[in-house]
Length: 305
Length: 334
Image: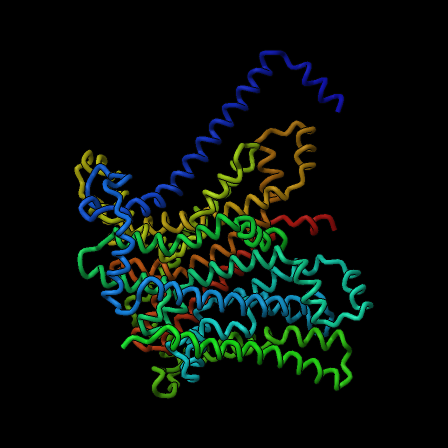
């Protein structure tokens, strides 16, 4: 240490000043670059929101009015009225209900299934465990499109096309490999002694799972929860394939329906942007309130793995 | 006739609860069955707990996997039983379908541009964020924003951004068009420009998530390594080349693999953005159309298997190459 402080003292005034100037310059460049990147990210967002509040006459004028005059909040109401005209019965509350129904049921089933399986993989020794675990990891590489058609045939044979079952009921069997992997990483880090103490106290497997494991991995469960919620809220292919009746559509498929019908007439971009904003808003709110969990869930697989 | 919400939700709710309860009962049943045969407590517990996944593996993975391979050698429209036609679907794909090669080229080209550009961009931003700067939480939040957006909303937004007559991009470029005296560019509807447009949209989307992952990787690099490098009088540049990048390489590798797999499977954005027919369609969309619009489930399965082989080959290639450039701390020491 002493050699460093000595050499620092030995540096002449002028050079030290030069170093500090270089430091400041680097900082300024960093901030400028970061600001430029964030403009690239934020401008489209703002453009979406601004378009959604514009009267139709202002959509196509240059220079762009970033803050519309007047601000038409009723675009949001009108967009849904328009959708209701195209697909009778599909009003705002119905779409919200459909989306939440799918999202919540899928999330609950996946969290329960995944936590049980991860508990099994992390805390018990049984023959073939490691082979099965590697098999599970390799299913992550399998593109969803490969299994799509046979799975569709299974649901068709069960007579459950145009119901929500393919989107929510099938999840009880298995759950995502990625989610099991993530949760297992957390469960592995819990010391064995806690479990042993509970067994001595006469706790059974379910009690250990419910009273010890789940509370200890609560942050991981929350992280998984928000990511699964987001995944199901945004999921497009599943509802697109399995649902036919417009009143059953969740928001994302309604958006497609809306877009197709509107494209036949003049594109009503202000309504489409209003719908996109409505679709994005809950996820953004969730992101801002549970940001820590989003980032934790995202990074754990890459860094801990 | 409008079906009431109750009529749609209730039957599913019942079946959902029944299947959930059924799976739990099966797990308990398996445990007692194994115990009955004098299997040790720990082993019986383990198998019982992973039962949901075993069922899922069989029903949602292994069976459909084998079945779709079989279907790829058949003609199948879902109304008649599949009819074995040997390699005809593959022959059709490679020699007869005029849209197959353009679609494959489009998908591959998209991944080849999107993955490296996105990765280099997010490494740069992650390095900037890793400097001692103020307000890191705010920057990270901003960059991560696009990643949480529904792909459908992203697609619609960028269609509007790139709208030839009135999108933000063409409005901004108006002076350039005037200067060069050319027509405004058509972006998504121009065969030569749809690729850059898709790549810009793709980068906007993946940018943030990759950056956050890479930043976490950067924060994981032990500080001592830099202190040692400082003592050796290493410059900023050589610290980047000899410390930061090697230590970050496992995270870069992870992003590369997931990026390739993800880009080749682009679906929702491609579905929302119509492009000229001659340019082909992204493979996932083509598979969807062949199956669910035209009812060619056999041919669609063959296409899906082709996509799987491409993904596996590329992933294998990346894994093979990883020995050359990915540095794992545990390995070198031993």
